[in-house]
Length: 341
Ligand code: ASP
Image (cartoon, rainbow, N blue to C red; front, side):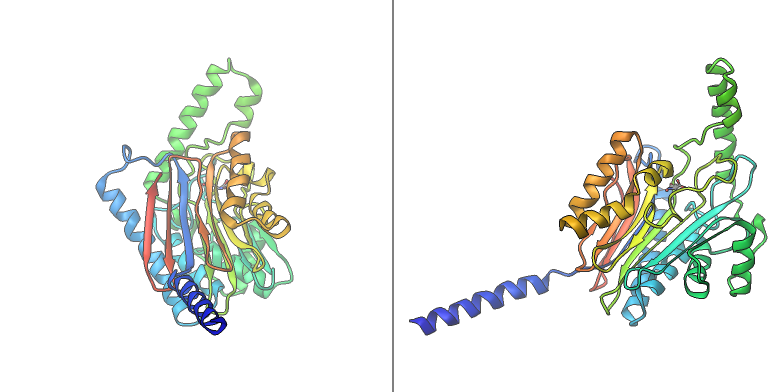
């Protein structure tokens, strides 16, 4: 009898294990920005273009992981695809500053070593994510900005382009619209000198920051984010994306996280690291930790979303906007792309 019980227990354990193994873990998650993305303001062509670009990005990352390369390689390659696409607010297609420039920010982090690299306010680097990686791997620093970052990137062999490369008509028109709305606002404020002088960053003109988190065959996480920031930004404004712990973070003990949204709120809430801290110190599952922190952002008036993937392959993609371009791929290669709520 005892023997039978033992056999039965073993059988049940095997069944449970099988069910667990049958559940495919996620190996990569990406986002292409959060914002007022509704079915109403989307055309079938535009929707198809986004789905195709996100699918291509995921497939690229998946192929890299499948070949046995690292999560850092996958994150960099995936973000390249989105930086090179004019659809996203990163690399080609970045939004314009108030002065009509494209100033880009990017960061990457290695979850195994906690090494990180970032660049901010760069205007000539074709793929800012590669410059961020070069800062992490080829310098003793974590963050470089402006012309210094560009000089370093060039010396590190990262591709440099004419700033004109980043121009797209859609983003240029977005800037004109934002400037127009800004001056209307200044008039409505009865010519309030302060608001006229400072201008405002229109947080509705920021869709398309890109990010990726990957888990490689060795079980290591990496996260990266790349952006043109927010339309009509002034005075060398830098958002959350390149700030380690705010818009980007990775730690094998917890998760890899990449954020998108109104950067000032993500910086003040140290969003990415706060999620990791809840997981590390309070043992919360990744989805619960992400929800708590994003709710905090929302209560303060910040909008956006984030993607997070833990070392066991659990994924979460919460957002408090109308939509967020996002997608996942599992270890079996199953790709899923989503846009709306
Ligand atoms: N978080 C980015 C920034 O504030 C913008 C975005 O994600 O859409 O620069």
